[in-house]
Amino acid sequence: MSRLFRAVIMGPPGSGKGTISERIARGFGLQHLSSGDFVRENIAASTEAGNLAKTYIEKGLLVPDHVMTRLLLPRLEAMTRHSWILDGFPRTLAQAEALNSTCELDVVISLNIPLETLKERLSHRWIHPASRRVYNMCFNPPRVQGVDDITGEPLIQQEDDKPEALVARLRHYKDVAKPVIDLYKAKGILHTFSDTDTDHIWPYISSLLSAKIPADRLDAQRASTH
Ligand SMILES: Nc1ncnc2c1ncn2[C@@H]1O[C@H](COP(=O)(O)OP(=O)(O)OP(=O)(O)O)[C@@H](O)[C@H]1O
Ligand SMILES: Nc1nc2c(ncn2[C@H]2C[C@H](O)[C@@H](COP(=O)(O)OP(=O)(O)O)O2)c(=O)[nH]1
Image 1 (cartoon, rainbow, N blue to C red):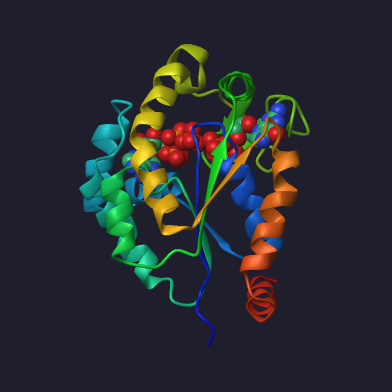
Image 2 (image 1 turned 120 degrees about the vertical axis):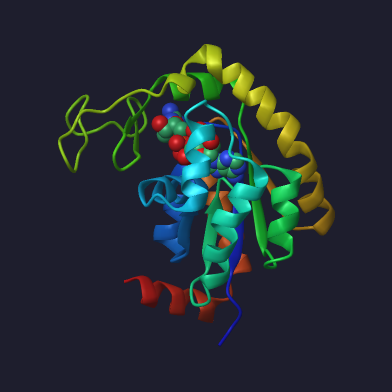
């Protein structure tokens, strides 16, 4: 069997990690693994790591590295049959080093989006809290304004998507992500995409993945996800 394909997507809040990961999952048959979803699943299941993570999230803090790695790495190690795109992890150098010791990455996608664009997007981001489905009132609006397409339940806006909170989040992202980006650059696997529109970036990401994922593996992955 050919080796699995493993990719990471990095970028500040609102840069389009979730949106692009979903396109990659659909287009290339990779499994979309979101660190935020893992955290929420563990909180819902009241696992030891989930209970610990909850105490930080309730205060609006990032979950400490040792809790994140305990929560995520066993799940990644168990993914022996599926290629994946990992969204939201690693966020720190310690997380990147822990991931390094678990698996070899093929590609790291870094999204470099102007601050004004991020502010604009997040001010229009609405989510369905139970499923975390993401909408944007301009880019991908729900069919009926203010309600989730699938359940019909109300959508909400997150406190930390408001412009005042965003500037601090972005500053924090830059400080913490820089050494991670440098590490992947040094390994020669970093690919950075800069634009104001996901639809402009997508064709470049799509060609990168088409070139990096061998055709036989692509067919097998697509077949196993359909
Ligand atoms: N790699 C990580 N390291 C530390 N905490 C994390 C990590 N991934 C997720 N979390 C925690 O889980 C929460 C939800 O994560 P999620 O990625 O869904 O949302 P987010 O932080 O609002 O990201 P974004 O705005 O970039 O989509 C985070 O706010 C953070 O507390
Ligand atoms: N206007 C506009 N909005 C976009 C574009 N790409 C994604 N969005 C929307 C979808 C979300 O509401 C918001 C943030 O995207 P996301 O995929 O949740 O980002 P991320 O926080 O996972 O990195 O922006 C885009 O290209 N244009």
